[in-house]
Each structure stands twice: as C-alpha cells, then as structure tokens.
Length: 431
Image 1: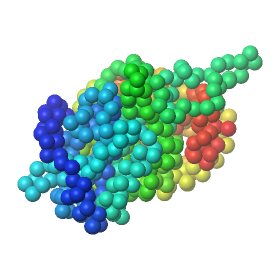
Image 2 (image 1 turned 180 degrees about the horizontal axis):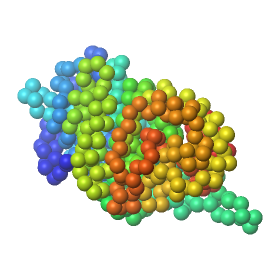
Image 3 (image 1 turned 30 degrees about the vertical axis):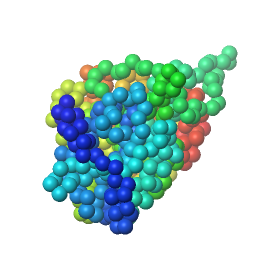
Image 4 (image 1 turned 180 degrees about the vertical axis):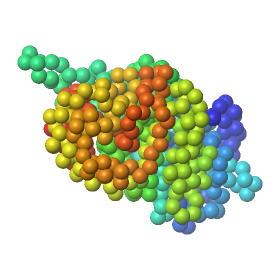
C-alpha cells in the first residue's frame, strides 16, 4: 500500500515548499473557508517515515487549489527532515494544495521553536489557534496521527513494572507513588511486539545532553490542548478507542473516530481522505472507515487486521448514565469476572483494554439500557474477523466499538489515576 517510491516522490514535492508568510497567509486571513482539514502529526519518533508516507498519499488524492474555499493544513515536522527522529527538528505548519498545473505544493507557513514538542498541550493549542486565525471557518476537522496508548498515564504502557503495586504485610495492595509523571520521561527502548509494525507507545523523542527523553501526552492534556470545537476528530493512533478517551473529548468535537485496537503503521488510506472530508455537504466520515476496512480486509495473515469506530459525542452522557447504573448494580460481579472470559482488544501483556459491553455481559451485569445507549453512541464501526492472530492477537468474538478498563485486572496505581478521569467521575467504575 505504501513503499519506498512514496518517499522519493514526496521529496520531489517537498522541493516546491516555499515560505509564504507574506503571500499566502495575508491572503488567507482576508477570506473565510468553507472547510478546513488539519492533519496533526506528532511524529518525532519511530513513525516518522510512515507519517511522511501519509503526506505522500494525500498528494495522490484530490487536493483543493490555493484559491478554493477549502484547505488542508499539516502541523508536523518538515517532510525533508523525517527519518532522523533521534535528532529534534523544528515543527512546521504547512498548507497542502495543488497549483494551476495540478501539481501538489507544500507551503511552509511558519516554523515553531526548538522546544515546541507537538505532544505538549500548550504547543498543540498554539498551533491549532494559529491555523484557525489564518484559515477562518465555521467547519474544522482534524486527523491526529502519532503513537498512542489509550487512556493510560504517561510512561505506563512501555514500562508498567516501574509503576506496579507492592503487597503489604496484610495482603493489601499499596501504590508505590501517589503522583504521576509529567513533562519528559527517560526514554527506554522496549522490546517490540511480534508481527507488523504498529502505532503503539506514544512519544516525541529528543536527545538532551546525550540522554534520550520522550514527551508524552495523556488524554487530559490532549483535551486541554484542543482550543476550539471540531466537527470531527479522527485518530490514526493505536488503542485510542476507549470510552475513557471518548468521554474526555466529548466536548471537543461532534464526532470522534478511533480504533479500540492497535493500528498497523501504514494507518488510514489518505489517498481518498480529502475527497471524503472536504466534499460539499456533510463530510463522509463513514466512507473513510470503509476505505480503511477495504485496505486491510483484502490482505492476509496479520496484515488483515483493523478495527475502527465512529462515536456521536452527543450520546456519551446517556451512555455514562446507563453505565453508572450498571456499575452500581453489578459491582460485585464486575469485580470477580474472569478476565480470560472477556473480549480482549490488546496483545501480549498490555491488558488494559477490554470490550466494554462484553465486560458487563460476562459479569451478568449487562442491561438493555446500556445496549441502547451503545447503539446510539457508536454510530458506525468496522472490524476484520481477527486482529494479528499470528502475533499474540485475538479473534473478534464480541465488539461494541469501545474498550474499557477492567479494574480487577489492573493495579492500585492505575486505579488511582483512573479516578482522575472524567469517565470515572461520571460513572464511579473505580471507587
């Protein structure tokens, strides 16, 4: 689907990149755009080449012209600087369009600072506000592409042993710390899981004084970094399809698209995204999901692996209300349900993502109210029959479109963090 040819072609396109503060930006500020699509790529990491190929795929599809009332804006690292992700480069804000001859053009509008990591909430807010001020519109959509680890706190997915509980003399579990990491954390290589490369384990890497660090963003900071409302946000990121993520972002967009499982490193099908999302009328988000499904369902083995859900954020309050009742009524049963009986949406030992509905069903705590709320909240979903079955994966026996934490297969450390999330405050899953 993507290859070395993409890199060569993109470098040729990148030659057309020009600074356009005087020419493009001033003109942009004088007009109002019908639709603006933002591609936010936090890619100073091992996905740098994959994200560069995503831009190349964009150039192969339908692009708006410079004078159109639709715009595509990329927030990321300059295309010619990808690959050496161990060397920090300044992020850029780039407009992608076609010239009068139909040739793709990447216009660099501005460069951010050396210390501006795209996984910092203040950098995200400043970048998105710049786009909104430069391309005024009533309709913004965003695709967020990077590594990801769902609702988990910073640094936990890659190094859970650092944060595991100890057992006291009475047998009670004791959290080893009461605070959670913030800012950069020491970068430590982790053993990759077998099978195709995926978009898991979130960070933007940097070398400071000869030591490798990573800047990660938890979902509370992600919500804080989104400064205005979007028509939709689509995540080309692993494991973000959690009810915890959805509820944290429910006031930031009308529709939220994401995968409850990992995403193979090739990601979404960007060749058709501009045509789908910038078309007249409502954006065809379901078409984006169908294109994604077609890319992977036609393959074989571990590469025939995909899942994605589209959430109507206006229905999340009703889902929380139904789940709160189910959690209260079924608290004892949920606490004793066998994790092995519940549909996993993870591989290997990363056991923090289970199918929400199947948790309740296997505990005998399901309800028609939860089923109705899920049916209204998950407006569309796709999944292949299995996910990376040859590399520690699983078959889809159940799939409601949202994953959730299973507290009796977690830890006291995670429980304490979970209590800070908006979903838990609304539902009291963890007390």
